[in-house]
Amino acid sequence: MSALDTAGTYRLGDRTVRRIGYGAMQLAGPNAFGPPRDRSAALGGLRAAIASGVDHIDTSDYYGPHITNELIREALHPYPADLMLVTKVGAKRGVDGSWNPAASADELRGAVHHNLRRLGLETLELVNFRLMLDESLPAEGSVEEPLAVLDALRQEGLIRNIGISNATPAQVREARRLIEIACVQNKFNLAHRGDEALIAELAADGIAYVPFYPLSGFSDQQTAVLDEIAAGLGATPMQVALAWLLQHSPNILLIPGTSSIAHLKQNLAVAGFVLPAEAVALLDGIATG
Ligand SMILES: NC(=O)c1ccc[n+]([C@@H]2O[C@H](COP(=O)([O-])OP(=O)(O)OC[C@H]3O[C@@H](n4cnc5c(N)ncnc54)[C@H](OP(=O)(O)O)[C@@H]3O)[C@@H](O)[C@H]2O)c1
Image (cartoon, rainbow, N blue to C red; front, side, top):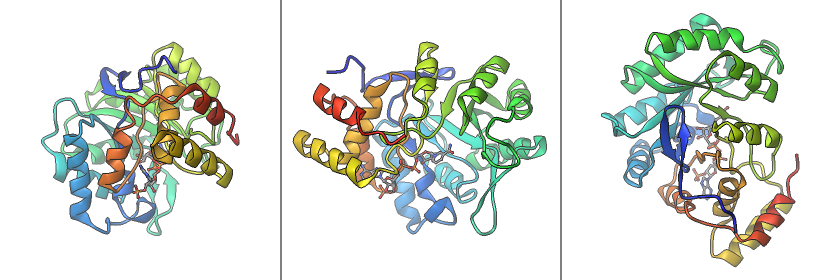
């Protein structure tokens, strides 16, 4: 049995949120581009999330683009006082749906203003600077300039908290030397565990780690292990994958993405699950990297 409180809360910047939130990316069309197939279902999913106690939603104005933020505003504005709406800047979409860097000072300022306007807010609770990890911003490049832009916006009162996403451990450390970092949002799941040491480092200082793709990229062999454990526990394989993350470290906050209310409810029901030690040991052993 794990000693971790999987049903609990954790600090996210200057707020405290439940450990299971909601990732809104899947609400736009395929590849987070264009409108949803069923607009009223997307609005209903957001309202169901809030009605079920979600107090942390992850979004960006480049999902759609603009569409996810517009849906959030239409479904939820005026927002519940305890809702932590987290957005990201640093990317823009091409007309073909491609994902491109947008990290100049003008682009970052513009993105913050677009998020404010589309979400109908005067201040953004938390903005992640999302690195694109390409030629224009190499993997180990400095994050000083973009973070200085966001920090200036924070001092102007347009942002309350700043996080970083898609960053290497060295970039996270540089960011933390420069400004207060509220969270790190990187890819991490059962199969993909490159950030293991970084997560522990952040946990020691009480900083949230928010894995994206918590349910994506499992091999057939990993899926078979998940299926077997889930069958034995009367849970679904995706619930087991989320429960493993919650038990892995106390600073992990989940933002599973779904366009399905049934899946949303299954994901939220993971709060309070405790995986038996044998299941955790099996899952600990199936990483690919
Ligand atoms: N910072 C970044 O660079 C970055 C990158 C990617 C994503 N994100 C954020 O992270 C969030 C999560 O990532 P993601 O949505 O791409 O990936 P994900 O959470 O790993 O997986 C989403 C997929 O899992 C399915 N799913 C969700 N719950 C399920 C359940 N209980 N049972 C079965 N299938 C389930 C969804 O399909 P259904 O719709 O059918 O449920 C969807 O296809 C996003 O919403 C976004 O906010 C950030």
